Amino acid sequence: MNIKVLVAVHKNYAMPSDPMYLPVFVGKDLHPDVNDTFQGDNTGDNISKKNAHYNELTALYWGWKNLPDVDALGLVHYRRYFSLHHDKDLSKVLSTAEAENLLKDYDVILPKQRNYFIETNESHYLHVHEHEPLEVTREVINKKYPAYAKSFETVMKRTKAHYFNMMIMKKQPLDEYCTWLFDILGEVEKRIDYSNYTPYEQRVFGFLSELLLDTWLGCHPEYRTVDVNYVFMEKQNWLLKGGKFLKRKITGHGEH
Image (cartoon, rainbow, N blue to C red):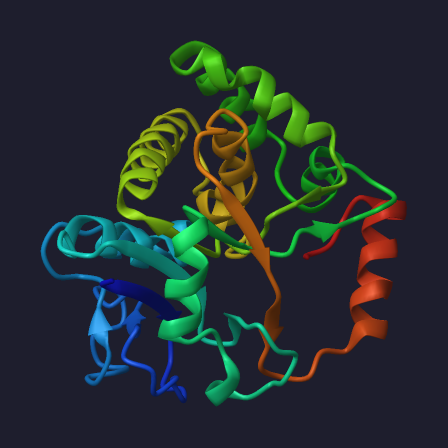
């Protein structure tokens, strides 16, 4: 089985040795001199110039358009990987053999859901981000993809979701998902002016897509999914993260 898992990266960083992983330097058109080793997201059909607004999705778009012969395509981050273990060790991340074994029974591999417990996905988004993009996304779905409207509202009301834009999908669901996703994001992009947003908030389409994956999956029960553990390769300050979370809940400001 030909599986490629793209590793979205924006600086020089250690990579897994398993040939299933393909590091993709995102925003290559914006930073042409930073890295000459990794595959750039600016070859073939690409949206590399939009990386400041689409985040790791420029890697997903590149893989979708330029790797036609894969049986399954995935996306992870240079510091966050799927793993059947809990070790912060690049040699212990999901292997080709493990991915092939999972894809015998499932069509989509997802990270374990992130649960906010005390707030919904929608309230979390609105506490952290500009409101207009989410409202316009709702309008676009209702108008262009009304069959997905109920699923979107269900995801908005839940407290958990598959975040991080991480997945490994077989070719057919991936093609269907990307066609749908990038069409919606393109429509939203036409309708909002994010030029005055902070640099963080200008990453708007990467943030929106985190909620659209579950929206799409909710309308495709024909595709079997499995949640897999993920590991973050660096230390995290959970006390600081928890403090920021509570600050958002109280003040409505901050980053996630």
